[in-house]
Structure formats: structure tokens, C-alpha cells
Length: 347
Image (cartoon, rainbow, N blue to C red; front, side):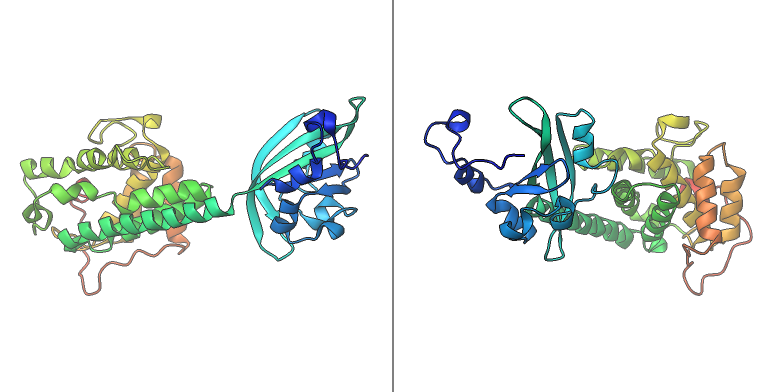
């Protein structure tokens, strides 16, 4: 395989120095032949990888700048050899200094003058600054969500910790169901502020000791719509507004505010619904003492396949009975002997 020549007038213009042009590029460039031997790297490669050009050239690519797909069927060389002309993907490259560099990797076939495959050209765009900026944004967004959650708790002290416990349970259920990390994050964000709409419910109703009247319950039932109206125009990377909007919907259509059924309800909302009810029954509320986990599990199992998603119920029961999540009622609060129907309504 030929190494890139010092001058290629026909390729990039008369009198231009091809290698100087490649060295000016901000992206790392590698030329690799069919037996995985590195034939050329540009200056940006040495900066990103931490491997000197003299050490990289002549070495195997997977030894000097390995990626997540090396030595797998997804290896870019293998896929190009099977007929792809170009491959673009997101992945980590592992640097000599020990850090991993997240990047956008573009791989193209490198061919001889006769058109035969001679190897690949791999271009790595370092996305570390963008990823770091995105992580700062994610943390800031998480802080805003947490502030909103605490604001709700300040207005509704009888359920202090409710949203945090529901968030913890939602996360465990999501992991049990095999959610990706990113999707789990979205569910956690929704769970942390699922009662946001109660911010417009009068405190006298929220903190009422005793059962509520039907008009007062109608005000309570409006909180998913209120939360949706607050959040719907924010461009979250997850369906936060819809998840919160639907968390009182039930599979059989008996929920509110839209009366959705079955798969019309987001899976995230189905998870949130189960976690919300379990915590509402388990822990203390202004209108009743804590009922307990046993009663909560009995309730969701009785409604398995009716109001609640069967796989969500099974996952919830598993994480709670195995002790992977512990819901702690407030200390010193007596346990109730019966479960009022209002427990689920006001969760």
C-alpha cells in the first residue's frame, strides 16, 4: 500500500503540499492497510491519541489507538471489506494517556488506482468539548429539576420525600426492565417533578387532614394537566411533559385526565404510575397514617393487567421484595389498618 505522497498536484491542486494540508486539519486522520498496519497519521492524531507519529506508523491500529469496535464484527475494516464504502458512527477512542476520547468516527475505503481495496482512511472528530458542555448542561438541568421538586415539597410537607422515593423506585424498575442509561435519566427527571402541577393547588387542600370533597378532588385531579401546560414547550431530550401528563392514566381507561388505555400510555408513565401508587400507600399522608409496603404490593398485584402494566408490576415487586429499594415511612408515624380509596387518587 502506498503512503500518501508529499505532493499530489492532480489530486488537490498544483504546487500544494498534501501532507501539510492534512496536518492542518483539526480532526485525527489515519490511513490503515488491510492487515491493520498504520501507514500514516496526521498531526491532530498525535495530539488526540498521545502517540508520536514515529511510534504509530508501522504499528497495528488496535494497539496504538483502539476503539470500542476493535476486534469485533463491527470493526470498520471488516465492514468496509464486506462492501461498505463509508461508515460513520459515534464511539470512544482510547488514548495513550489512559483517557477515553469520545468522537465521531468516519471511515472510508482507501483504494488503489485500479479500484482495488487497499485499506481504510479513518477520521476521528474529537467530541470531548461538546460532551463536557453537554454534561454541564445536564447537571444544570438536574439542579433546576431538583429545585422545582423541593419547591413542591415546601408547599406539601406531609409528603416530604415522596418524589425522591418515587424517583428511586422508578430508576430501579427501569433498570430491571433493561432501560438504557439515557432513557432511565429521562424517567428519573420526570419522577422528580411528577407532582409539579400541585403547585397551583391551594395549600389548604394539599395539607388537609381528612378526606377531600369531590370538588376538592377535582382540583387535585387537574395537576397532571397543569404540569403538562408548564412543561410542554420546553425542549427536553426526553418526553418529560407527556410522562407526567399520563402518570395517572390506567391501562383499562379508568385513569385521568385523558382516559388513555393500553399502549397509548407511555411506558415511562406506566412505570411512574406504579411507583407513585406504591409510595402513596406505603407512606404517611395528611388524611391517613402509613398503610405499609405489604398493602401497597397487594394493591398493584390485584390491579396487574387491569390498571397497571404487568411487566412493570412484576419489576416493581422484584426490586422491593429483594430489598434493592427501601421505602421508609416517616419515623413515629402509626400504620393504618385499612387503605382508603383516596390513597391512589391523591398520589
